[in-house]
Length: 338
Ligand SMILES: Nc1nc2c(ncn2[C@@H]2O[C@H](COP(=O)(O)OP(=O)(O)OP(=O)(O)O)[C@@H](O)[C@H]2O)c(=O)[nH]1
Ligand SMILES: [Mg+2]
Image (cartoon, rainbow, N blue to C red; front, side, top):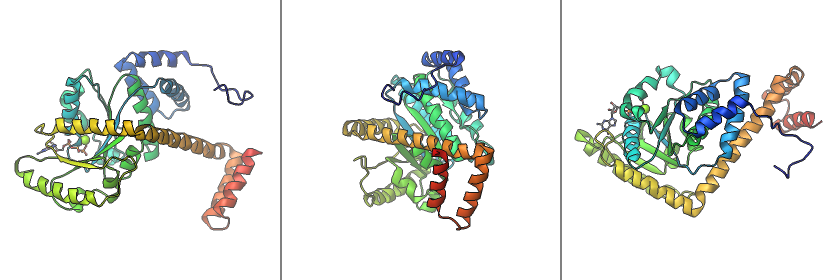
């Protein structure tokens, strides 16, 4: 920070209770971790202040972690996979954390209970941490809180961090933008209609997994596998240099889980050695920062009554086409600068 303008003082005063909470999280205290996640989920202004302080402390503590996004239509077997994959890697000495983004859960009646029962064994393990999605008004809000939760669980020593999301809305784009590796789960059965998966999601995937390749489903799983293998050939090469892989598993019968984990590690090795891993994390940090900065700039206009009035007038002009967005934006920026 020494090169920054010395006239601008950063607020260095630390809140003792937050410092204490940070230390407990660092020691892997699960109770403290749960408390911290509840804190960051709160929108109370004092809690937000404390959360920002806590996350700032955590961010200074750099950890070598892997963040994995898992998406797929409802009921495809995401939680079943995470239960068995989680248990498998715990045997190998890992401590997985599982977070969920599910903005639809308020409407559908909540997958929270479902996830707890579906990840029965894993949720009892001392070496795993499972947290369902926070309720939020907007996807952006939920996504930001999930990003903070990732930082918290990593500080507590969990790695890898899995983020489960339902692949039918916008949330998978949010999850993609906060993870290093993105896995798409497919149902056995032909056709995109059956998958309920949008085109763009397939392009985001690093690994495509056809689940439920068991019993009577095997034939359909093979058909889906073949169909998607063909489609993959048509995709442009990814920026990461990794070409998307596809495989079949049965999460329920625990078949192929080991191969999937090998593939995850192969991906990690490839993108770390090519430098893409770091480039991508930098890009994500930049996006997070810009989001924060932009939202706070906007808040300056909406929190101050006088500025709010000007903002509203200008916004209305833009909406009605009576002022260009450039004129309006520059006008407001001028007010801030002066
Ligand atoms: N036959 C078969 N059934 C499976 C498999 N994996 C999951 N299931 C079943 O599919 C249903 C849904 O599984 P979940 O793991 O809850 O699916 P999910 O994708 O997490 O569902 P949501 O969180 O509601 O979107 C359950 O009844 C599972 O037992 C599998 O490999 N084979
Ligand atoms: Mg689930």
